[in-house]
Length: 210
Image (cartoon, rainbow, N blue to C red):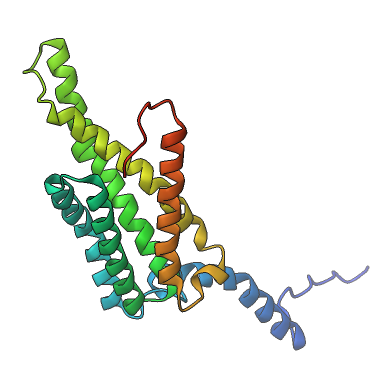
């Protein structure tokens, strides 16, 4: 009668142990890289304090923008002031963090302003206009539709730079340079120029203002 065959020991031995350990480490490497994203990512904030300051700037950015444009009578002047303020903010980001994070936080600033415009200015204005038309509320003041139109236009102007900030993280040659913060400003200007050109090419009878 043949002796029963013992099951093979599945545990690796000798060099197999080293190979298995190496394979396991290689498989875990992408996961560890994902965990290092965000604040711990290369090109990110230089410290958690820097990241916190950047986040604070992003959060108060809409308040500064909102006060500026509530008191700004000339759109061209407002555009110039806004660009100067953006340049200051981006330079602060540059001092606090690497180029990659500069674009992330700049995009976060634009995205936050755009979202706040929709939720806090455009939609409330539209509700007042609709209520006035339906007779369920007082007639809307002429400044209300003008406010909604202006903020909607601003969101359109910020769309092109926001798209650039979103895709820039896939191109190290863009955010890796020491002048990355200057490139962010240049691309904002280019984006605004493209938007103005598209506005002027539309059916609007008068040229678009900034």
